[in-house]
Length: 489
Image 1 (cartoon, rainbow, N blue to C red):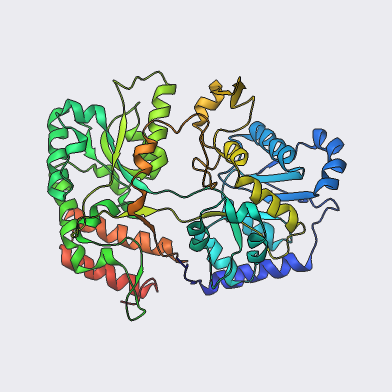
Image 2 (spheres, rainbow, N blue to C red; image 1 turned 45 degrees about the vertical axis):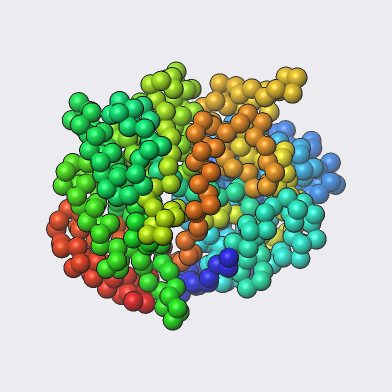
């Protein structure tokens, strides 16, 4: 599947300036380190690194990486992660991981002339950077690498191919979001989740039974992140509506959730709200709030839509906290059937490591990408650092207390290596959740995704609250999306 290229004039100016500055300048320091890195967690490990730098440089030189999400959970572990990656690749790996505002800091660094060999980027930034010629075409290097061609599913490469070219390697394998359900609460309500009728009416009946079975006045059977319209896909499947923006046969962009055909699903959400089955907090909550309410410590809701990995993380966190499976267990389903009897789920947009056009050590960058696409690299990105997150005795892996708290996720709960075997097994519930992957597709990557989410969320909330009639609200939603340049109709 080919990603389509859209980018705004504002980003054009910003990124073009960054590229020109990066090409024209060297780092302010002779060793290539940033002269000033305010508010940035830098895993330099200077004292220990100086003695090894010469030997590592002979092996493959220095590789500077700007990371987000991936790596250690704190500054101490990031140093260990950096050393483990250096030892595994024979490179002098230097990692910077901003504590917050990653994209802003990354752009400032590039604009200031900082040189990196790999930068962590999402699908949207990938498209924008390609549009500015700020990423290096590494297609030939990928094709000449047996590891990158043989260890990664060709469909993954197809998802990030733009006009026949590839400009990045993978941080992880992207999975999908599923309907997550608290199985203990379902059982208390007399519900076998495997027998739930996969229709809007079927789930409505489930929510009613959950509400009736609870004595907690603050309990709501279902919650979501409505302000961002995230993620409504399993329910919109009832009308066959794809999330995000879609291109029609005439080449025009439109948002299926804003169409008249989506009205029955919006009416269903309103019905849930009117009958106190939908948490009113959904109108202001973020994903962290949603997950907190779904957690074993809270259990203020019983059904959400979240990443397949979070099904396992909920269970792992509960077990790590001493909560037994008899008291808390999250299971998953693919949601509501489409009119033709299938399901519709969202696969995450790629999380990537792009190679900047002015990267000083492209060979080293490719070597890191190759390592990430191996069994060993996958273990570092998931389980973590040996003798810190886990130990190995007679071939048996065991998590440390720290490792248990980290939930087998150091940036890639699902490594990109196509034959990866998890040495500890995935967290409880994950195997079931990822089995629904056949129904998942990625959304079209657009640069104004924020405008899309805010607009659909805003009018969706007004529809659900009854502040505007459904059809009128959808018309206003469509008009605003067009006025913002998100859609054509």
